[in-house]
Length: 208
Image 1 (cartoon, rainbow, N blue to C red):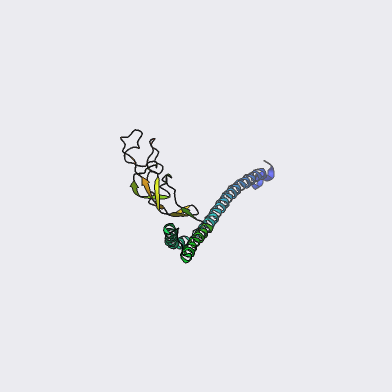
Image 2 (cartoon, one colour; image 1 turned 90 degrees about the vertical axis):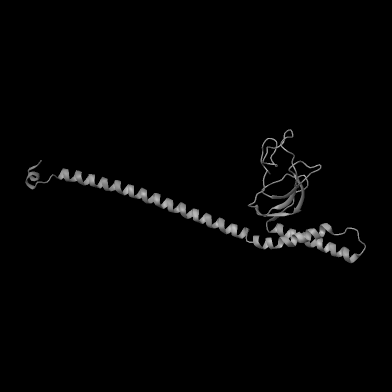
């Protein structure tokens, strides 16, 4: 300690060292604050990106499924046209009647084409097809000659899905399964399950 230090009661070296320590502490505090702000900014950016993605997804869904209610209103028209063409007489001499039937068939095809252009897919399982609970609704069971137990015998009403979302399940008749006493029969309680216990197609999707 010099005479000036002793006279003034100050130690310059100690003051410099103290100032350096304080500056280092301030720098560390600023580093912590910057890191916290950077983390906060990243979280805000991620949240903003999530909001943007969610808004885009909802907007896309709105555009994709906007016609769902309108399509439901046209299903009855499609059903009537399908029934008319199915039961229309095929052998007739009257040209007027023949032209009328052809016109109905063309109208039905054009309506189905309009459905397909807008993302509506017709679901009409063929005889012998596997029952799918996500697309089909079993209305009744019947003995199925030449059809595997649990398979579709007949489609009573076609179903429709819109961009993969079920709008109306196809109403079908399924082949009755025998009792569990038969060899390799399905477990009791699930008449549609396979012999190995697979329950695919084993129930009706009531949410469809």
